[in-house]
Image (cartoon, rainbow, N blue to C red; front, side):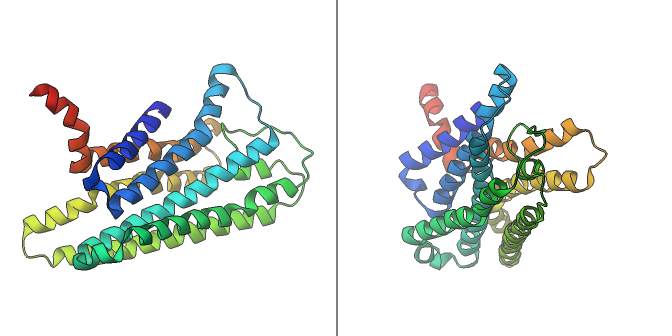
Length: 279
């Protein structure tokens, strides 16, 4: 899974960099998504593999907090990128004449910077709060990575501040992002139904297909994992751990595959060496 995530996302970055026709807002956001997926998978998988292969089941507390911070902050950044991609699709379909003047390179760069700053600032209190608690119980967490609540639950103190802040950020980020994506696609669907022919509707909707698949691949595992943590008290622990891992590992693997299969320009570039061999 790690090899697929690294190879897939690196391939997306390479193709977009080397193909001038892909130098546009949609593909810049796709590159941001690929970088985010690379950081997320690299934050988790090397340590996980060392647990399975070398039984290296210990991690320094500072390293644990660093891993926690990278996982949470880049998850927030990834969610924001999906909103930016929805906005790009909205402008491209609902106001195509202004797309090139609205989403210029400087504007895309500013959006990317704003998303990174949002992820950095919102998650920054998490490791500081976690470090501030006194730890006098067991130092074992039932996870393959430093999951936030699993770590702070080890503290022998009232951790309501950490818990409430974490919940507030989750609701604020996921709630707002899903709301903005829903608003964008409501407008997009209205614009598509106003098109005169069925072929035009299908072709226009097809340009959103990849993004919709990526949204589902990102939010469905996250929702399932959150529901498991909240209501799955009778579910076996190993299943909880598996779902927590899938929540973070599935999107970095599926995102490049989805865009590679569904985006014609990327697919053509990928198949170009084989086409040359065939001729």
